[in-house]
Image (cartoon, rainbow, N blue to C red; front, side):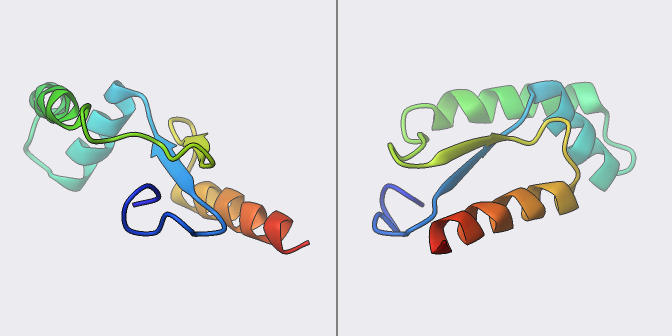
Amino acid sequence: IGTVVAPHAEVKVFLVADERERARRRAADRPGVEAEALAADLRARDERDAVNTRAAADAVVLDTTALTVDEVVDRIAARVEERRA
């Protein structure tokens, strides 16, 4: 989004997370679906998207692997506040 849809946004954040953690999160949202199957799907999607998915040069890359949703929101909000100062 930061490179095509909103290239002039004042704050750009590119979220990343460890593949295993992403699969664990998806499995938690989809009871009955195994994390390993989801991990395989994520790997395939990542390979397809690798050509078109990249952080904008001025984006903050935020690794969310060990963060809760609230922590991610707090870090993004802090970045917005930094830019306002």
